[in-house]
Image (cartoon, rainbow, N blue to C red; front, side, top):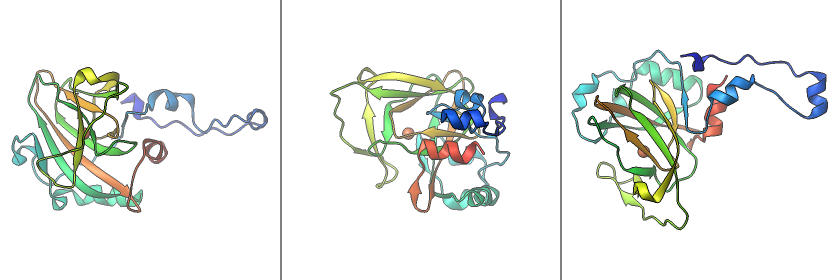
Length: 207
Ligand SMILES: [Fe+2]
């Protein structure tokens, strides 16, 4: 969990001001915080129910009443509110379809992964000239996805999602599992009614 260490703020030297270089954080923060996935050190079980109690449907809506009040309190302290919660189940040895959540852009979710040893989340860039049609999911009329075949995208990054990690979901992404099945509780946070960009997330969780 070395990458969860906070970088110490360092004072701006007179030289830095002169050079118009503003090193607000130690350089290791920039190395460890990529634009796809940020691990967060948080010792809170996000749900009041056992994860297995939700069954093995590939995609299930989770009632906001099931969220641990301790998690809601923590999020309230940092001005975040969860507006939607869902659970994804992936059997072993699967690479799921690549998709963006919604129309695409720059917005994050807070994902808690249960089991899923050696599983990864993969992020992609669409190849040029690929046009997609927004498709509805089968669990929620208001959540739509753009699906991509793997030959329509180029892989940018892969990383193991932790408990939790902040993940970019506005660009195409997929999940790969190995020997173990995987549950992913996925929370949509907003601040003052607006989705959180990855840069905003870095500002929130690097403090
Ligand atoms: Fe997604």
